[in-house]
Image (cartoon, rainbow, N blue to C red; front, side):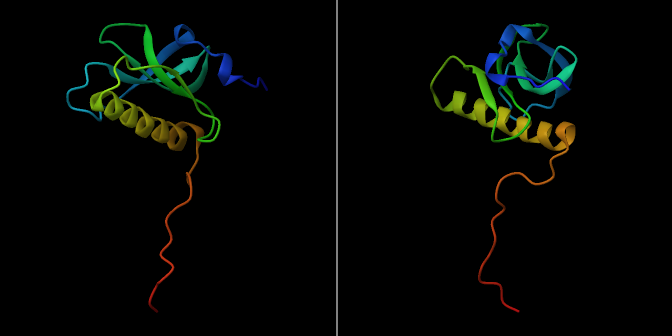
Length: 113
């Protein structure tokens, strides 16, 4: 089995696999599941009708994820776009990688019986 080094993947090496619905209404870029070669590795943003990935989150788990590229601005909209890409990455982990539990779920310690 080939073990990927996510730190060495470059944006220009990522290819579109399947479109993901937009999470931000005013977002120009399209969100796609992305492949490195033939292997699914995460999610990325592409301009409409373009094949160049401008930002991506890749990894096999939430702990080893790597963010590639930047959105280009440092305003609240950029933070919203990053958050939407993070949500898409969580969906990738659940649907493509098969993770069913991500992170620590909140537990109410004061449950009344």
